[in-house]
Length: 248
Image 1: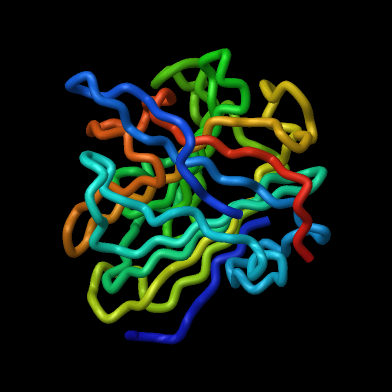
Image 2: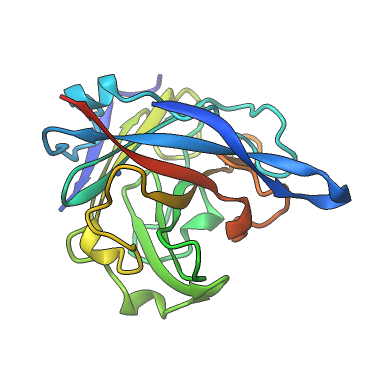
């Protein structure tokens, strides 16, 4: 590790496979399902990932290469929780060479290193939310009316959205780093297409989690791989199922 950790703070069960989606060649791809536990206390969004609730929340399955579902060269850990007001996301990204330069909100963060959340609360209609955060703590939040049909980026910013990043290393594209971590709290009031808010146990939403890695080797990673060079394929998103399981 090249330096001590720093923090950028700005004021996010069991995982199994139970569903499938068609892919090329007439075959089917298995889609992951994550059971979301309810946290009894609100998560402190500071990037430290040390809230007791996170220690009790199981992780998703490993992220894999988006293009073909093969094993990824980088470890990525993710978890999800909810309460009455927020959907919380946890990312921990092992990374020996952390890099990003973009500092303006709603910039094209996907061109560098970033984690991404794609959320479709009502799979019967085409709109979805996209969130991206880079290691500098820059946020891109987008509301899309349909696949690749976003509202103008600056016209939709979640007012109560919270996020934070902590980096063990330096964000300069040089080696010797260890990891970076991110927490996101997405307010339910912005998820306007959800059939019920807050969600109730048994409610099922479509979701995908991604990671874009640039250095030393460009790599696109996913929780539920789309098996194409495209993240915007809702039919290949996994599922989250809200439960009444409580964690401290």
